[in-house]
Length: 302
Image 1 (cartoon, helix red, strand yellow):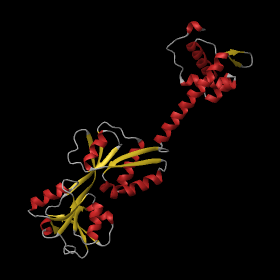
Image 2 (cartoon, helix red, strand yellow; image 1 turned 180 degrees about the vertical axis):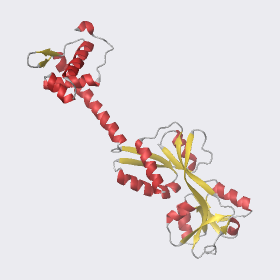
Image 3 (cartoon, rainbow, N blue to C red; image 1 turned 180 degrees about the horizontal axis):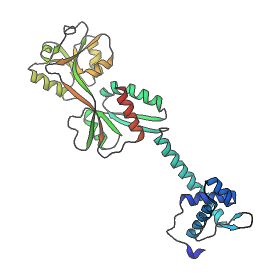
Image 4 (cartoon, rainbow, N blue to C red; image 1 turned 90 degrees about the vertical axis):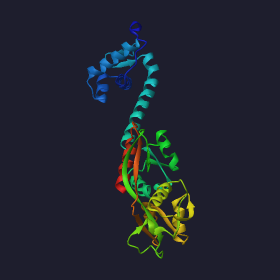
């Protein structure tokens, strides 16, 4: 049969499965039953395989098929290929059914504190074999992590995200005054930006996070803020406020997530300043089944 050998021939998975079944069972009828096809279909697959390889794989006898030396030599290779194919199929099935997988998300530490715990907890309970990787990064690193595909997606407050990403709003947050319940403004029904004059304040350091928004709004309102402490992390501002070092200005969602009963959260007005917390995905980037499922869990937790 060597005259029919084709150097470009590649056996199909169906042909290899038919070969393996016939080699193990030695009968076309038994192989057909295992593969849930007709006996003639198995015979055709074996014939195509023999013609493509240019060699006989089975000697026909009256009772059974006897593997040739070429078939015996080919057997371990065929078994390995089919194991790999089955492993690949199992892997894809597990990924699509969330039996395994991973999700990676870029997010600043401040947002992660109040956005992720409930979402990760519920997602992990439902899909315990899917790993959630949190890439907590500084605001100036946020977009680059997404564009560089170091993560599946990001959750943040990009002011000028650019055309390279798609943005979907998850929630709207507002700037608020956070103070102790014995602070002069704690009982006020409404706290305006102008009411902050003369009160010692704590907020994030200049140029970082929401600070440009705070400074710009205060300037527009015509009030000079008495900033006595600047922090890198809002969690520091929370405990400083709790021990009486001053009131804080921060996003209301973070302040409420701190859940400190000694603190009062007052959304600032005149003007009321909001910012969108958004899902950010690189344009053209396809999300995995696991990533889409996590986003659904995140939205449900908000």
